[in-house]
Length: 263
Ligand SMILES: [Zn+2]
Image 1 (cartoon, rainbow, N blue to C red):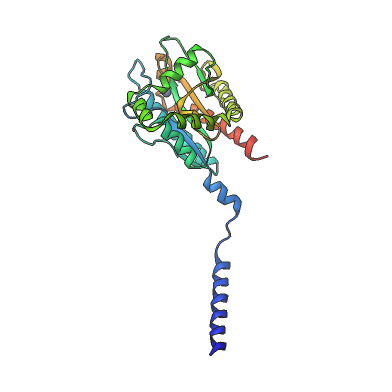
Image 2: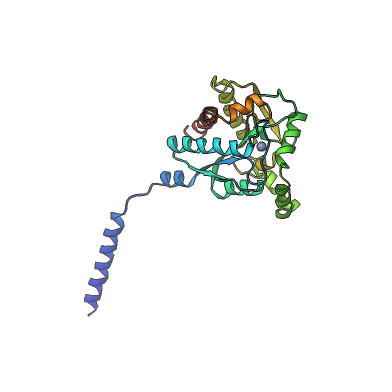
């Protein structure tokens, strides 16, 4: 009786071993790649339309269109999972955008925007990384606008976070300033050197953008061109220009990934 039981046990163990060996091997590397993500953040959305153009274009629509193109480029060429903070016209707080990156093991966070200025002739592309103090008065004003462009945004932020949490979130991005500045440089370089984009190079700047402060990975905010400048607004709404911007941002982030992850 005992011997028969033992044979059954041994048989079960052997069957289990066969089943396990038949499973496809999962390497640690491929597991890591699957989990890692790049988060693209189309600026504004819903009631928060962002900056408006003379011809009626809204920043929130252009940022979404460019973000979709950037997502496709990354998915076609890289093994990272790409997450959009929004894929439709909805309201989303800055804190939720950052949380999405932090909850999805993001290696990069790219926020896409179009610029606005009271000066109608203001033009060009600029890329920001987070700082508690702004590069200049214009950068400070821009960050103020981006941070408060919707009353709803302010209301959500006010309800959701207390002072202690905001300080902790500020610290999250503070640990990545050096990497974020490198990422900003590489993206800005591509935006300004691409003749198909052909906008003024306004350089890499720093300001306190709420959407970047809480992100726990290298994070930048791209101001592709000025929607407030009628000439640049016309470019921004064109499919070609949006594609060129997406390609430039992609090339910059691809260079950063190559430098950082593939040494
Ligand atoms: Zn914006």
